[in-house]
Length: 78
Image (cartoon, rainbow, N blue to C red; front, side, top):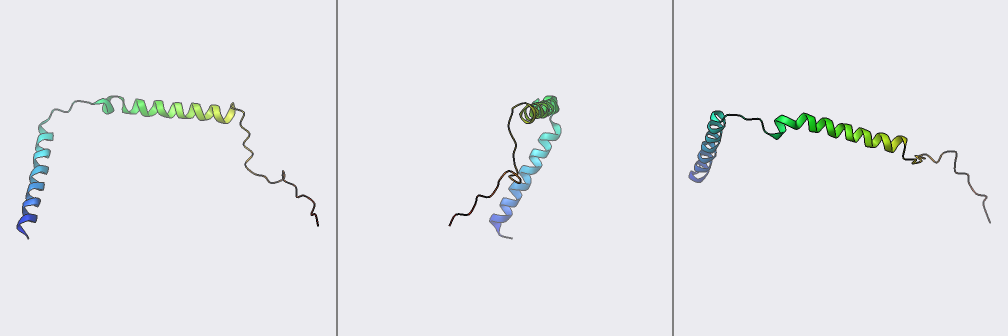
């Protein structure tokens, strides 16, 4: 193995070990996502459902997606 590659690999392994040791000794305190993550996700799902429920039922949008039966051919002109 080349000396530069070996040094880079050793440096990477050492930094990984250092990070693992630091995180193992750290007291884990709940952050925002631990405290409110599920609540925010549930609130977003409720808002999404409410908005689309309104759009689909009350907004008065005509959802004519298929032209079958509504388009009649014109007479051919020569």
